Length: 195
Image 1 (cartoon, one colour):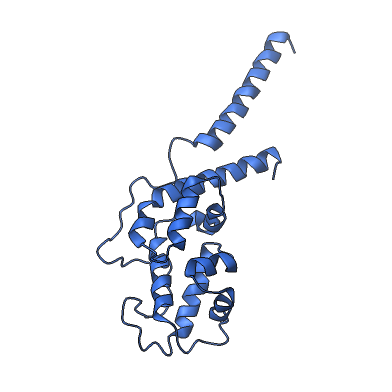
Image 2 (cartoon, rainbow, N blue to C red):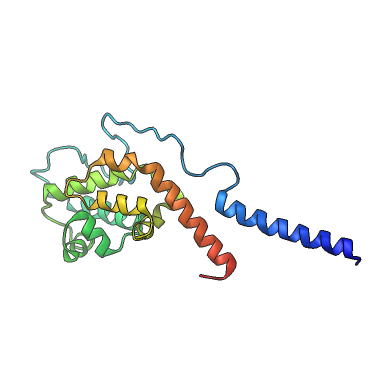
């Protein structure tokens, strides 16, 4: 191989690696994070996770006997779908870890559920509606990143005693961009053998 061909080969390899790295960091020109998220703000009729039951989460829960298993299943689905640890989930739900374990013991349906817990689970479920379906399971890990200002903000919103659906839905775009960036960073780490 002559010198000119070896320079072309080296240049081609360098360009390929540069293109690969820029694609990972910058994407291909289209974003997987939604640009305009439109939600039904009138009543939040769409929840991120639904169960197979007909339990109306927006009704008065003074008489919720017999609905415990439905609550338990939804709570477990929310925790698993977003990748929350028991500790993280208990902090967001503002209950003890023992309470979360009790909620998720499906062999012992709850006889009574506090309305504040039902309301908080309902609000959490609806607030997280716009998170990209493919990245929901990475949400909890992203929240624990103390260097990401958006993650810190969302974490604070989730820990607030008055979990505000509008506030969280207002930063859904930032959440999805953060999850995309986190996923891209993890892919680059694997590619470079740093993980």
